[in-house]
Image 1 (cartoon, rainbow, N blue to C red):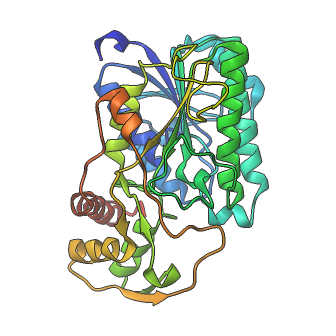
Image 2: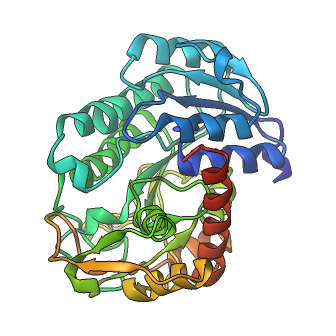
Length: 356
């Protein structure tokens, strides 16, 4: 990582789950980080401020559009604030951007679709426009495995077309990929989109199944498992995700990829400096095995209520990660048992300290 040490990375969504882990890893590897987050209340802001405190950001110092210093420099700012986003780029000499900020959640998109346009589309457009005005070496951005939608040809490959999203969240992530390509083509901005597959681990989001199941078991309450438990996910541990991002940052795609055939186009590459990767564990786990691993970590049986499949959900996900492995020589490999144990230990610690 020597060639990128001391360079500056803007991490949007830095108070979020993945952004928090990534920011700490980047600093550990000698990079300078500006973390950006609007600290919205989609889930409990106490957890977001606890993550910031873990990066030595004092909550009382945080004000809108003001840079606060700690382990990283942090600014509370909304991606829809076009003028101040441009001003941040103008004044900060940013080398790389990792855009993780987004309105998250598949199910929430069924009741509040407008927030996905604001955060995921308008917000991302403002980042791309800022990179156009103040060029950077590489833009890495979060897409999602949900873009595969109705596709049942597993494992999911980035060479497959993704034209059948099931919910607005997935549609907004698909839009991000298309927007990135247009800016790569028109303005030569190198962009890499990452389709995350069910990321989990310590400091994870309260709206994710792992947190919901664990909290219910700790509190001896019932919890719902959909499709009667007949689901599987390519659960990916957060340390594997951020290690992949760290390795990708100094490896922007180049123009005129010789593997791109415009007469038979692969959606994951282009003649423009553009590429897409899956980041998954490449090893789907049955949902009930996931639940059993939580029970084992807590030494407690869960009170499960089985339900029908939720609208906008899919039965299984499975990532083909060969292209990612070939590009960065790294493949996610953390076991479910280890990852869930680490999550549960941190959950109990945060719960004890009243952050959850």
